[in-house]
Length: 636
Image 1 (cartoon, rainbow, N blue to C red):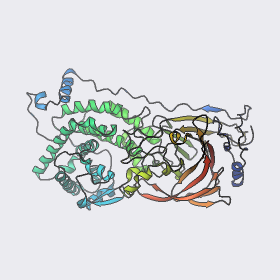
Image 2 (image 1 turned 45 degrees about the vertical axis):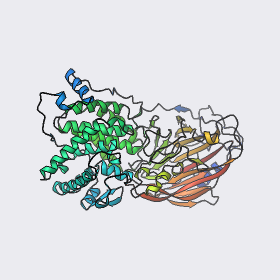
Image 3 (image 1 turned 90 degrees about the vertical axis):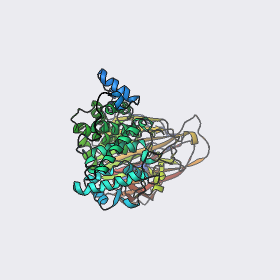
Image 4 (image 1 turned 90 degrees about the horizontal axis):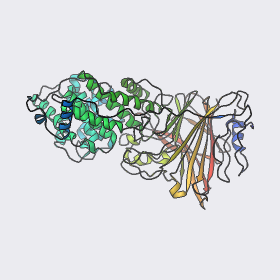
């Protein structure tokens, strides 16, 4: 084998007229530039893999842990309980199910210990008269509690009563209870009965019931007995309304939220056994359809993954409050949900920016995982969920190797296929913008669609078109429907050209999002060296038919940079030096076209937009296909 490092093993030959793959070696800045500029002549075939003792043998990585879903069937019950559940499912009232039993007074039978701490700053803001959502303050007095006039994050916070968890941390019980009662009274006055507004969205109603159960002492600690009775009857009326509508939720996660609210109400409210038996059966069925085979929620959103985990943790706390054994499927589902979430953590412990999420903080993720009781490792090869994870030394690579969520599951669906993020230690080098799920807070709502576009992710675009159509209200249209993935390990002998005896992880994926418009398949190959100091890539546009189309197209490769990175351009325009906050230096090199620097933004874990920059490689290329090679290497 020639002394050129690791070839892109197993890649198909590029289209005619394309430069070959970049070799995977170079130890200093000058040789690095030479290794990229000394490509084989146009039209030269990729060299064959050598078979001598110094050659690398590509080994297929063992498949990621295939987590088969457990038996998500309704719990086994005795004959009497089965009849009770069946009767309740038909809509029979409790008086008909138990005609000789004296009806219990409407009351709560237990106090739940909140399992998750809220945001103390948001709790103090509530006491001061403001909702604080993703860094944005809104006066409670000016909040529209009815009608579709709130931004989506405020809708979920206000109508789902998710602010109760924050308020619980904002002061003493006496101080916070007064605030909770005032907000609840205002909300009840604005929403006296169900109507087709976000207040009565199935997911919001489910969250509302669950939060009313978990944080009941905040709502029922006042001295006004009439108001307390009104709250209790409101809980019962809301649960009765949800009983008949929970299966009409917009997506599976909203349905799970609805079932969780019903189960919690059946557990905590007196005389709730019938509702509990009915809702447990519905919850188990919905949980079985919530996730893909490897445990990722069908929306592919880390924010939704967190929401699902929080719902189950809160529901489990309701079981503990009444000293009942939780459904075994709850812990089974938590064990499925946590590993894929951990796969999207960077070296700083915070989330990557995928499917509208921001960089949710390490402290929040750590508290969530601890509360779940699940001890596990990240899932590196979540093929059903669509994310690939590779770690090497201090480096973490995250790669979106799956199609976007289907329309009925998408919440903040993004056209991010074949985008990647890359971090080293505590610093993020390559990121996606993220933040679409937070739009309406400090991120303006008008930016929501733009943050979901392909150009807001570190991948390739053609003529500024999205690889999958981005629609309004978080929905997506046609585009990517097929993604092929191949993951391998590459090994090298210590006497090989690298001189270090290290290997690499190679991930290749392709999508058909541009086939209908341009007749081209986008294929991306990423190779991460085992010491974590070098990430090498190649983006290929390959004709999907036998003959490429005529004409030219505009191609842009975007690499959005993490915050607080200093840049310096090389003299030839094809290299950029990146100075990281930790003092290390990295170099990014383009194999064929110059690099420009443009403005960008990045959403942090609080939903705040942080100004940053992006490296952009643009070119006019023939519609018959082309390839672009690039390299990111640590120099110091």
